[in-house]
Length: 394
Picture 1 (cartoon, one colour):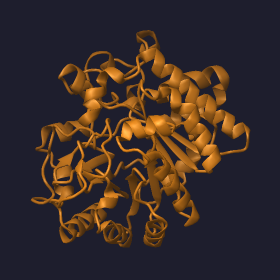
Picture 2 (cartoon, one colour; picture 1 turned 180 degrees about the vertical axis):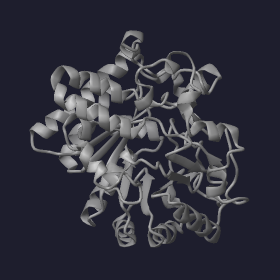
Picture 3 (cartoon, helix red, strand yellow; picture 1 turned 90 degrees about the horizontal axis):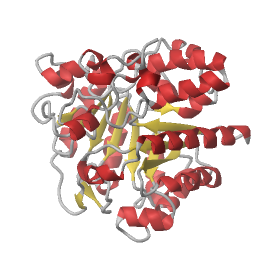
Picture 4 (cartoon, helix red, strand yellow; picture 1 turned 120 degrees about the vertical axis):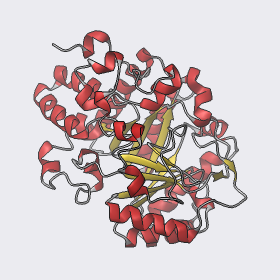
């Protein structure tokens, strides 16, 4: 996760993170990416069920009817373990988390145990009443996914009317005082929609938007040929930076982030070297705090059936099951070879990653993409768009 607005527009200084000792339990949410201890943010795909049929779903979501593998009391025990372990955030995801009737109860339980509770949703089920319930829980954030304007979004989601319901969900959340933001996954089919998303941020007056680079997993693996090439990705990241700067120049200090391609950090730094060398020095320090990809260390995933993964996209490696063993024990077990190596992945990456001058601020980028593309989890990430000259050590 790269905070474009924080870094490019000077929203955050290194001293802001140091003030809290860079402890994940003390850092406010907007600084959590700079934590030193990297206690894992845990994504719980609490259900595989969903009311939509998205073409890029990493979870291979199924029909919304049915039952879930982890019951309410089992989920509470899992949350108790995560809270005691020091995991700062519980991200309730799916499928669509709102198809589970116990979401409110479980989010409330996470809050009572001292965790921040956030949800990732398609938004179509957030009525006025549901938004009020989410607010009463003390939810920290609601992330609503959009894929573009109405025609594009509804085509991605496989259900007519999904776009209008998502926008209504934003309105309902805002009316209750819930922090709500937008999530957008970039690919060839919708990259041209990015200006529309920035206009929505302005028009809807939402405080946050996350742009996700495509990861080749779930149904998203079928879109591997739909990923942007390197030149297109550079152009998109420049566009995101330009649009973010335009908002700041207009007095709109929105939070803009890119996710799942950590060479965005070095690329932003190289641009600042030309435009604002003094700020570039501060940004390089912050990028070192960020440390790049944290799959298996600063982020983890629990699947709908209890299986533990390094992140929500990389499901072909399972390290254990919370229905059989606590997450905290699984996560720190040195006998689980791949998971143990992911705690210090910089020692294991190969090829151009191993000699890259930005390894300390990228950590080799996304291992799930490397394995999907090359069949080797330690190979270079094919989505790295930096040139050999740019990554060469001076």
